[in-house]
Image (cartoon, rainbow, N blue to C red; front, side, top):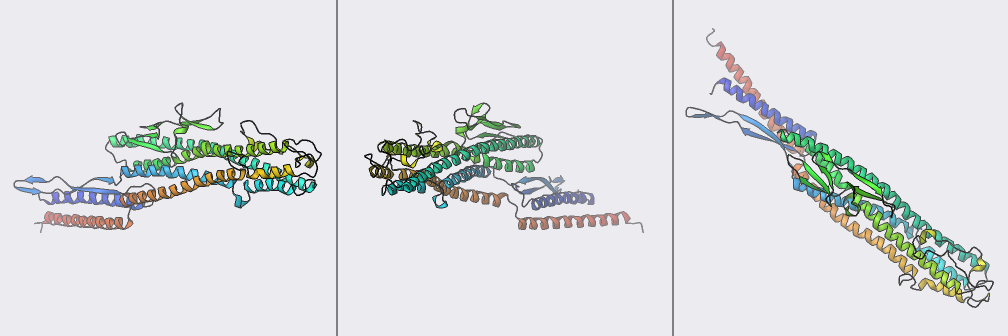
Length: 459
């Protein structure tokens, strides 16, 4: 040991190690902006020394492996917050559409038509026999009915669109779980063979984060780098290299698309990701808004019809239904609300059958302030509906702000740990290049020494 040949072996090994380190550093730099990429660090170690007599000789350096710097627990937390953020994004996007249906400042909603409708009876009471005032009452009633019809139609259309969105989200989930399953198989095989699967792990991390945006998942390590992935309620999505597709089926009672996992309806258990937000608005918020809208429409129609029948029209005949009577349950009342009379003379403004009487017109106008709908006046009940929608949006917005801050903090932590610092990589590149150049000079020096040794004595 200690020969020029041994020195050459050491320096050639050093060249290999430095070249490998340069390759790793270059790869880091190339992927500085690649989503999900975890930087790699090289692990250099002394080669096993040898002993000759009482002397110990080093045998150079070995590049053992390049290791990706990642924190699995941190990534799981990012996925959890991503699922919550996706749910809130979808929820707020749909709730803002609901709020737009009742945007009073934008010229839509029921507040103005309600006020105008009851005010038209008050105006009629000033001159019950005036035909123009009677036409005004019918016009205001028609505007109110159309406002109910349009609001109900808008909510129903939004619910129908959400059905399509749920189906699209399920398709996206199936594509991502299939991708994760394939990557699972590749990673597991490479890990078992002792090969570096870092690039595929990075791809799987990105796929999992995208999956978490769509649906909340639980991730469990299953050995050899493989993951088992389930929904929040435990329905299997990925086991090893096999994925389990979700499906949708029409619910016979509600008409909406329910989500199934291997034949089991899991719709109500899905709470995370954009799919969770879509289902929450479709199955809870919109039905609640439609139900309250129907209750309001039925309450207005029934109270006005009852009071109309208590009076007399311009011809002295008993009053008839002013609106088409809603169903006993009130279901669909907003969509079906219509003015039942078209002849202005049939408006029952009189309380005693004489043309000049305005008693019933005043009574009809007074309905605006009577607690005829769930213990509230019509305008107050409607204000409660609008308030609930606004309150839900306000709470979700505040929660989204909080989740966004936490997610940003976690992503910054991941960036500090696993992200590529171009300054640091440039310094590493210089360090390894200088080591490589130095080793190359040693090779040249040894070659010169060998050449001199070979030529000794030839003169």
